[in-house]
Length: 319
Length: 272
Image (cartoon, rainbow over all chains, first blue to last red; front, side, top):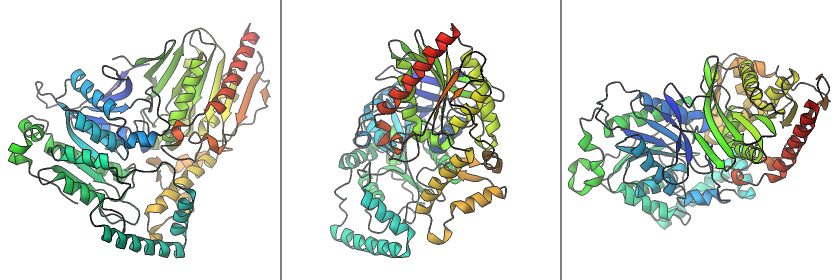
């Protein structure tokens, strides 16, 4: 058996914290300056999925980013995929509270040291964004974040059966659809009364962490998938607009770019989704982390010299 | 770089790429000291991999802890293995299984060799077993045909698709089946199903074999087939993501690990 084949290598990261298994996709850049330390990309598990993701989409993205010149790593966090370790019985609660943040920060540090990187961009999907955000807060080596279809509320692992049945009814019968629309309007009215306050089930520590991270000027790419009964980046009627809320929290000096990906679902695993993610991320990488080193001063220093640097003006964009 | 990992004092997990004609297969060998048997795990189909991965690995480790050497792998074009999924056929996956079985069975010392498959993996394992590979076989939830497994995956995916699609644009499972029958590929949970894959799936049936196969001239070749209940999710379809992964599967693992050990002992005695 081989540990390494063309373009890929199986790795174990165990210098700091628990050992984890991963795949390293070597950069295929041919025109880089040998003295330049590249920025690496680290793709985290999406909740409990193995490091390949749904439809092996993460393998596709990792190969693509490596082809564009960015060394890319996909790892299984402790207890997930091929990595050893025990998971808590309440996995979702653990993830929601940033349980993987320490392990992620450890691995970022190890990647930087072992692969001689200038820093790491952490990529998270769904629940994976929570560990990514909390790790970014802990890790000085984190230079950017790619957050795919994030959520900022506390999800329930098991949906009550009655609620599930109501959802099915609302989906499959015309009366149900009508009732669902009425319900949405009532919620919208109620939401209007509450003002811009997040609902009680918001993940407040995560929102605080977001604010702490985004206001430093760390470049963040936020990719949004279509949701049921929602239009573009706007939520379903009656639902709290977390996106608007987090952009407001990020402030004017933040470097948050928002892109909406149409024609896909939450997993981004279909052709349309995976190629849009590739395109948006590569464009963002080229703009924030150019390879040739010519604007090296523009990358990480945004974070360190945020208050003094006018170049860190907000570039939030909505598509 | 070293990818050999010590999970317990006398167990090691060695991940690697095994070359097969035209591709490399991702394999993980669970080495143990003084093994009593070898088990080749043939996993579920493409999009079921991600759901069943954690309990499947826990099962590998459970067996390894009982001094059973385990080899698990990803199908060509799936997960960490190389290859284009849309170009693959059941014949390709079967050929890969035969190569892996041959490689694994030849390891020293010579030990009882058991094939174990889950879902479509059970069909492939059964076909391999009928061809003479293995000393015993354990099947978990084999479908009657590969098409049955594909159909249930398609139904689940269509259900999820419908959640996002407005009423007028919604397509039913039969629309997609018609599309495949008309020669147009369908993308299901990120995997491009070719019309050929669909067509071939009808031919891949669970072979019939007697409960204790006596074809072998050396000894009986025992088999065991278990239809996993819903409680076995996410090894089988159903359940809740983020909740089922950490369930305790000892009720299932213990019985079948004991069965494997019993076959290893019986087989070892026959070989003497």
